[in-house]
Length: 50
Image (cartoon, rainbow, N blue to C red; front, side):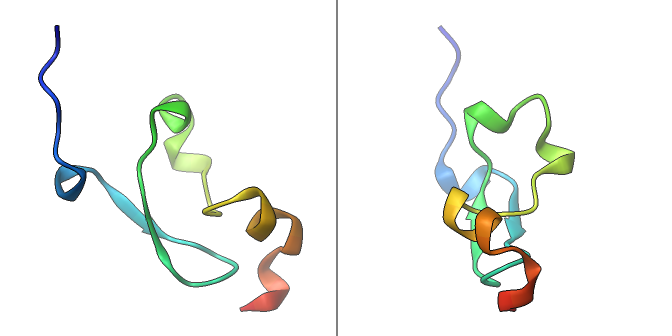
């Protein structure tokens, strides 16, 4: 079984819509480089909010 990582050790990004930081998630493992938004709500709002 793989060792668990602390959340502080995971990579983070800043959301393009709300400007808040968010951490890496397992579901984003394959396309982390393309992830720009922290949630579906921010993605649907787009960049115009910021």
